[in-house]
Length: 102
Image (cartoon, rainbow, N blue to C red; front, side):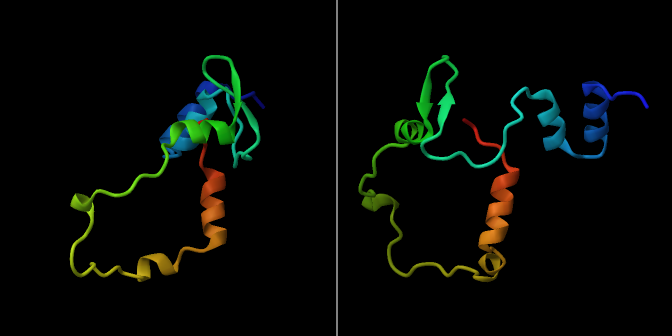
């Protein structure tokens, strides 16, 4: 049996519509899953920082909302049916299948 090359795997994944898997074959970073807040990561500039420090740097402190963007009067109704199927297990499964941007 011949060993499959990256090109073979990429072609097979793309032809069957598995784009995410195809992109993973091109990436040298095969790590996936949820990062821990105190885990150290290597930044693009070669330095390292904790996930917590990176999140704090990328997300600004909370501010009061401008009255111009707030809904005035009666609030619109939300269709609960869309949220009933969301379970902690489903959210965890989807999160584990995604790839962090760190």
